Length: 161
Image (cartoon, rainbow, N blue to C red; front, side, top):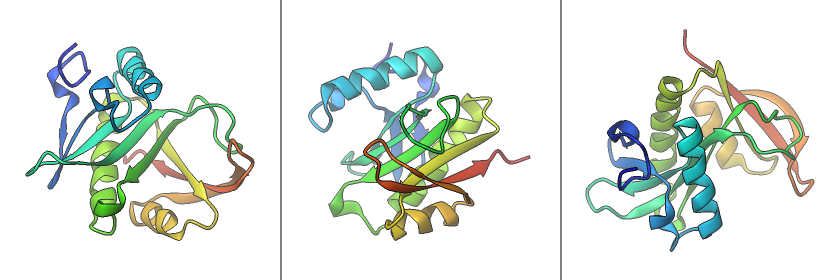
């Protein structure tokens, strides 16, 4: 395994302003170490997974993104579906990093997986996330509930033909 936590050197994705590297325990100062270990395990088992988002010019950590088989407990998403999500640190929000990172990692997911679609969900009141999903071409699929029974909306994006 190399320093990025992946078994090969193609596990780094370059976007216009971001470098996406597999999330590993080297980022445990930003995440729960247990989550980092789970991310590493997902990478080893499936050759895709959670990303650390680094600003290309400065190397600053700007957030994280996830692409993984969905976890159980979310009504409206099956555990055999590939789920995507993103979290941008407050100082970097509103600058287009989420759009850039999601577009890059979804493109990479089409290369790394045989999924015919990806899913994403958010709280029903999170307009920014809903706008982002629509901007990237996701379509509304259903309402549901999250692991804490909060109301959510589920969106899906089909693999380009």
